[in-house]
Every structure is written in C-alpha cells, then in structure tokens.
Image 1 (cartoon, rainbow, N blue to C red):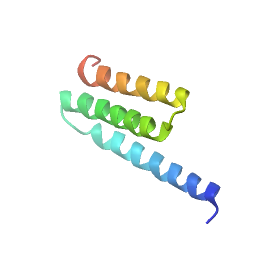
Image 2 (cartoon, helix red, strand yellow):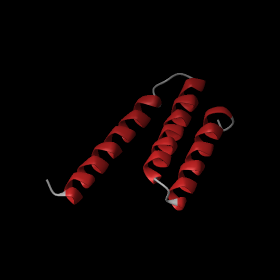
Image 3 (cartoon, rainbow, N blue to C red):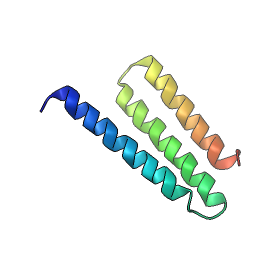
Image 4 (spheres, one colour):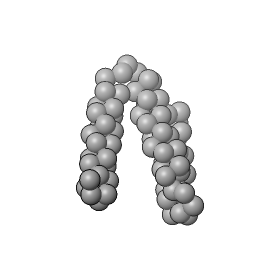
Length: 77
C-alpha cells in the first residue's frame, strides 16, 4: 500500500474516532462532560508528544494540548 495513502487513511480514521468520542462525551451528565473532554485533549497531547520524536514544534503543540485539557477538565466550565 502506498505510504502516503496509508497515512491519509489513518488520519481520517483518527479524525472520525475523535469526533465520535467528543460527541459521546457530550452525552455525559454535569461535570463529567468537562472531565471527559479534558481527558480527550490530554490524550491527544500525549499521543502528539510520543509522535513528535524530537520535533520541537510538535512537542510544544503537545504541551499546549495537555495544558488545555487539564484546564478544560478542572477549571473551565
């Protein structure tokens, strides 16, 4: 399989999974909705950090995602 096509398919699947999880988390009651969405951002940040493999700008993006996830989960309602 063409590596570029494979990467596009994985990206499309990841986007669909992310949107689906975000939609499902909106169904949770009260504070759990914010915690779940924050957790999704933290998970995305961790995945980006692992994917970065030394690329500084991706690591900065990952840190911003992790910080936003923690803020969204516990402080921003």
